[in-house]
Image (tube, rainbow, N blue to C red; front, side, top):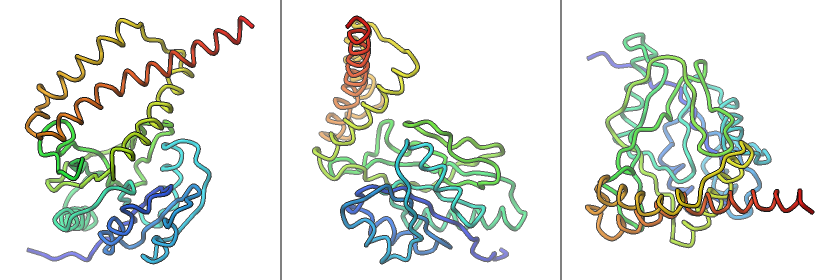
Length: 264
């Protein structure tokens, strides 16, 4: 089998107070040609850690996940970009597969513009082997000449023109250091999602919000087999069912405030 040179790949991350896991994330990216970190004002040790690992650090005020990640991708010096969050770890097997697949494309032996990577959640210290958070494919490796992130403020995604292949090895998503950390993010994401829906003039009836909770829990716990994940699976299903309820409750709050303001 012919050998190929290691391709030039830029890893890009956006950060804000990401010190908890950042050293582990960056140490797993030593093979990348460069690591670009776009920070939005961290007050913890994020910048010191990024400097230690030789990252190219840029500063930008946060105006939404989509615009922030789009900016980060644009700063990459290489065509091939591995876009990660600051709580996602690339295991060695995935690293080897990424290098191999991009090298094949660069050598003209394959024709892909992007690769989906299976991503598995680590929750309450346990790898979720079942359910929707186990090996869920997400586009994170791509040739930026063919696409980039959209500008959605939350639930952003990469929009790519071209062929995409799914890799076999998974990315570890260790997103929550504690339940306190989980609810900090839960609060931020539900607020951002509610604001987005409010700007789009969306509404949800009370009955639909109430019914959403038990239906989502049953779907997450039984249909998606989170019960096989033990206690972490139960907690995840419960919190997943709470998410839309809180999101729409915040949307209703925004709508009521606007209504009362107009009446005043």
